[in-house]
Length: 154
Image (cartoon, rainbow, N blue to C red; front, side, top):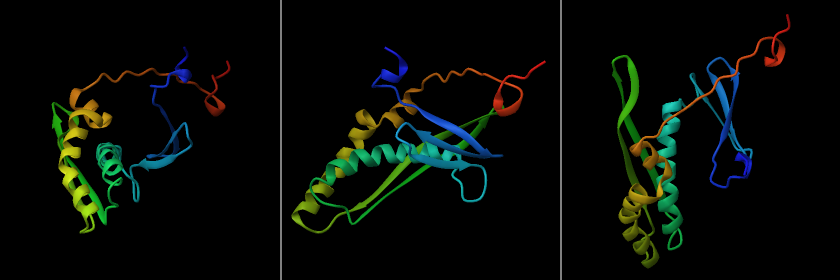
């Protein structure tokens, strides 16, 4: 089975659009522009967004079956740490602030939020579970010279 046929494979492709500016695209064609500069999310902010988004989907998908929230906000924070010249983010934290209508359905949905956040953290959020567990990041490099990244000619 090739990588393209693997239903468990997740991938995105990054393209440089300018110095410090990139577009990432998934197989479905969805895009996000990010990088370093005015109006752009940084890679660390994208990591925080991925953690918050993953858990939010878990909570929202289930509670919305009972009631649509009137407000749904999640703050994701972390502190940059530099150790021996190497950077990482520590102290990752999500703060859920969710409100539902004061109806029977809204009360039911509100009563599920805390447990759903816990379940997301313990079992379902692939992003936060990957970060917590840690996983190797490997790479390969292909460098070309010449026009359009094609190998140079002697």
